[in-house]
Length: 109
Length: 114
View (tube, rainbow over the protein chains, first blue to last red):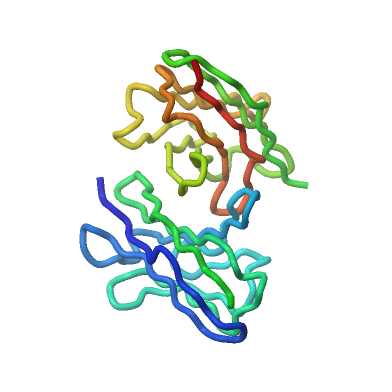
């Protein structure tokens, strides 16, 4: 099974910009991997932030965007807010099977 | 409003089976796939498989093949996830989710303990 890699932890200053990435052990991440991004806050169920690279939910803030960058899927938070502090997971699709990354713990400090 | 309501927490012995239900309401049940995702205490998310409610077709990752079965009942808009031969490491919070639309169940805690 493919392995999906994420940064274990990142820190961003309030109002700053940070990019989380999601890589694949099989090579470059493409649109065919249909990258998803999920946000999970302590004690809560995950929420789907973005699907299929860059499609947002109605509640996804404009300051959060998804893209493909340097062979990886990327989640960029611009103008970080305290409420963005959370765990972020990506998932990639491999011929019918989805695989989650290990998650990135984002601290806003 | 949209809801995915899961069955309650369970404690099981090693080797036993568990069946978790997920009842959908407020949206078209036969639309997108419903996925099962679990999270062991203090750990990340793990994808367990998906079911297509319209025809009941399923996809499971190799790790769970032979031990997991997902089914659905369109008359009650409910999907089920059964996991057999439970091990201590199956202790986790289990979620059903229609991830594309961001519909998630509240989670079901399954504890495997002797």
